[in-house]
Amino acid sequence: MFSLIDKEMKNKSKFRALVCCLADPSKNPRPNRIINLLNELNFTVDIFSHKKSSELKVNKEYVIPNLNTTMTSKLSRGFLKLFRKFSPSLTAKIKITEKLARISNLRKIEFKVYNLIVIENLEFLPIVMNLKDKNNMVICDLREYYPLEFENSFFFRFFESDFREIICKNFLSKCDLIMTVSNGLSDAYEKNFGIKPIVVYSTPFYNNLSPNIVCDKKIKCVHHGIANRDRKLENMIYMFKYLDNRFYLDFYLVGNKNYINELKRKSEPFKERIRFLDPIPFNQIITSLHNYDIGLYLLEDTNFNTRFSLPNKFFEFIQARLMVAIGPSPEMSKIVEQYELGVVSENFKPYSLAKKLNSLQADAILKFKQNSSVAARIFCYENEATKIKSKIEEIFNRKSKITII
Image (cartoon, rainbow, N blue to C red):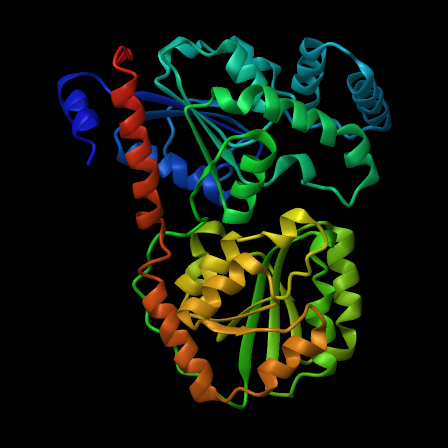
């Protein structure tokens, strides 16, 4: 694989790539892994993103300024969104979006020096497509079905949803490669916009671990990630009304402080069995999870994106050699059932999953963990990266006049 790229890189200077991300790429899994992959392929990688807070191999870092959260700034942003909503001009809508996302400085970057531009957020798509050189290859990573990303919010539906559809209709087809995280999302983009993204699972790198023995008197469950109200994390707390006393749960949460505090209050009746611990550093997630028995995620399908979710944490559970306990989310349950990785409840009610867990003994849980150990060799980023590498080589071969900087 990569005969063309390998040959060019031996004979000429390195390729250059720009990764655009509305997050800290040193902590955000998909941008982090694509940057590592590009480094592996001998690209010189620059980033246009929020400031990275930990080690990440990049050449130049273009930092997006922090959002001003004063009341005046919030009112100003509200007026800008209202103007964008009713403006008939696509150019004006795009300019306003650049200002709202604080990404206007992207216009100052010399795009022609890059062979590859990776877009990790939909907001970048119009500006990149308007500025790109004919030799730039553009990869767009659709980590959500963006027109419905926060569909439970009235403000999102009013201010954002229709414009995101406009972006998708006008610019997705101009990308060289489009990726997404699950088959359900890929099907939705194909149905609504006529493009079929390839599915690249949000898997971690392979870790050489073995499943730990399970103590039947104390079965250790874990959940980690963002505290988002749409995910109804309280359902995992309500499970403890029905769970045997053998089960314990640790939360490692980031995000909405108010929501986290609410979850803590709701867990008070079970404070001997539910703990809230400090978030796990990105590079320690797998080894920290490895200390547990069950990766728990009762994700009620409150909207389109939660219904077809196939999140990082799901694959991190597998890579950490845990049994997986989930609700009947179609993308996750298909993998759990195919590889016999754990249990899937009949519905999203806390009692339903508790009933499944109560029926398990230590030897059954250990068997599921052993199955995860087999699946970990399948669901690792090394395998997913081959999809991206193959597509990059295919596009580079097609763009025969590409300039090697």
